[in-house]
Image 1 (cartoon, rainbow, N blue to C red):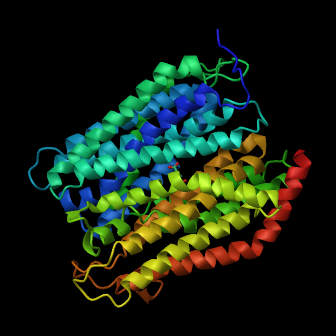
Image 2 (spheres, protein in one colour):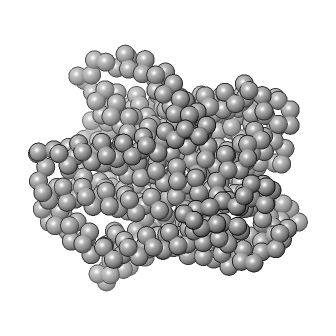
Image 3 (tube, protein in one colour):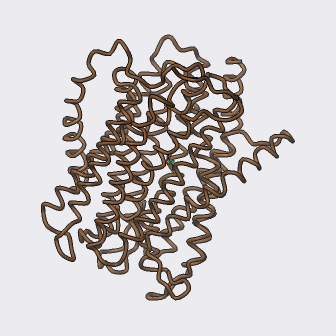
Length: 511
Ligand code: GLN
């Protein structure tokens, strides 16, 4: 029998189970990603531009498969089965990467290594599709609808995400990014172990802790579902599909971008032609689409962290502290660190402003997030302006950049999730959450492409060109992000009045 939570102010134990599971999973995702691009360039001997695009293709598919995972979970599997399946697949993927990175001497150029790389990443892409949307929605289902603790629950959950990232990134940078290409495998092994632990913890606690305040089990397989077992046959099919897409896209056949475009158009068509939705419903949906469009500019610049910003840390920045040289991939940790320490401060700030009736509405907060992002790159521009070849920049500039980016993230990311939650008609709740994920997918793809324009002094290819603008040095490169984020912030701010009006009307109707 399930016990009913005694107090209403504390959080259900199930939240901490999801917190722990997500922490281990994010250890695995961010820990691996932190060293991935360096592994591709230094061990796999890919050039920076190719490795950047490959990274963008991988992370963009990571955000595309949750659409499929959410669909299968809603109809057939339920959250628990999906999370366990996804967790196991991701652990397997890390172990395959470990094999890919093992034993081929100083450089990992053996064809088998390359195939294992694709296979490992493919398993993680499919696994993430089942894991991520389900763990996120389970958090909310531990509470009764309208429970005031829900927002706080998601804040605690977001801390788990970043704590996992912090621990994972620290470990993988230390054991994997040592300057010896054969060490990368230890990073992947650590991630495989972390993901296995996460899956075991979830499996151990699921029945005991995952229930509603009334004691009803949460996330179990829907009773009417008869196709549960048969669907496992879908996994190899999905894997082959993902492998094909990843492979084609990394060999100059653009498949991911059209696929994302098709998904957006398809979802828009489904929602906007639905006769059961009112004109007011559709206006709310339109706000979701508009906001999702703007966040693309945020994440595309933000997700330079494991790619161009890590190239910068490795090649153009002085990484020595107290006579000790830090691994380049370690600097990405600053993001998780600033988020973990900054989240409580931001919560205080919004509450204090709220008491005076001054808390900005969500679209304004998101524009602020974009502005902080632009500011981070602007500081960086000062650091690299007129830089002579061979001269290394102080790490201050990268630290400052991550500081602004992290506070920007805190203004934009958690708020975006709840905005989508509030505006989506119930019928399309998961599908429209998918639009938010799709924005991430597009942004990550763009991030890889942008990072491929990094002006690499070691390459003798002609200077990269973006929309007729020649990127000959680091200043030009970082300036692209300053301008794109600042323009996006200004436009979003300009139209925020209209967006807020629609949002308020929707909320008044719901109340
Ligand atoms: N850092 C958050 C997470 O990993 C959000 C990332 C995102 O939305 N791009 O869940």
